[in-house]
Length: 391
Image 1 (cartoon, rainbow, N blue to C red):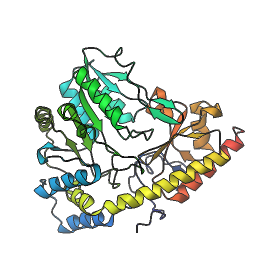
Image 2 (cartoon, helix red, strand yellow):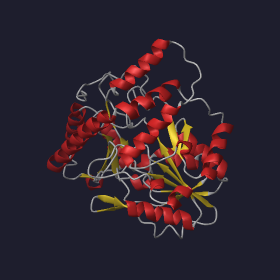
Image 3 (tube, rainbow, N blue to C red):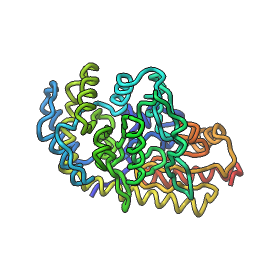
Image 4 (cartoon, one colour):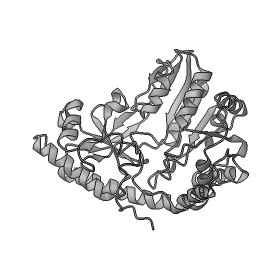
């Protein structure tokens, strides 16, 4: 049984979460923003990395047959999706591959559909490549986000080329229903769009909800879709740059493979290649344990807010280890909330504009941390709101 209650000091490890925002004394600030876990990864994966280190030779790496088989077996068992080895295309970071695809199969000024609010990387791969974002805002209804494509028809034109999906959705935690995925596929087929689905959180779904890989739902989906996946979120190894693109359509796959080849993306990270097999073959138990722990953190946060800060609304989350909280009833500008949280509560979180205009009035909090940190976060949040007479 993993010990997720253990507080691990991450200062001084070049941590993007803990070391890139250093103010005051060590440990004075509580960091609940960046989306990685504060948990130790599965021992099997750590042991494999130690084995690689102890060997002492860090040469160029290939992907053996067993690597592909581990991916195939995982998706078959966890997601009821039978994939072929040929469909699997190695990628470094998902964001790198999406950006390269956009650069090469679209032109400057072309439209790309994005459902908002959205994880900033998905916005960046569009904007930084000088493409046009076509926003399709998710609709908050009865504490839960729903999709509506009805107004999208009038927003697109012949220069719209890609539908960029995030499922499970970051930051809202929405897990898309089969009928919603079918609607997206039908829309993409009708308008001849490539469908790119970032499914990096696909293994992090709360029961009884189920993640459905979008290209698994039909032949039409297979023909137009690219699924982006990685072990990095699931097993807390985002510092090991490794991912896979799963592309059933041969023509699209060959086009993407050529794009990556031109970018000189060949040999995988030696650690990423080694630990992927360990993760998929031996560490399913760890995912179940960590999601049970995160679920309890979520339930604790929901209960605390309901009882002590009812002005906040926790959006119903079906997946990811992130929670999306509506603070609009506090009637406080985002800049002021940020200020009091940083200066007075010593809390670092992401406020909603980080995820676009549709995110304003919300905060995103990372639940993949020891419960003690959740308790401390909530107590600091409550105390500063009370001190500022906001509750």
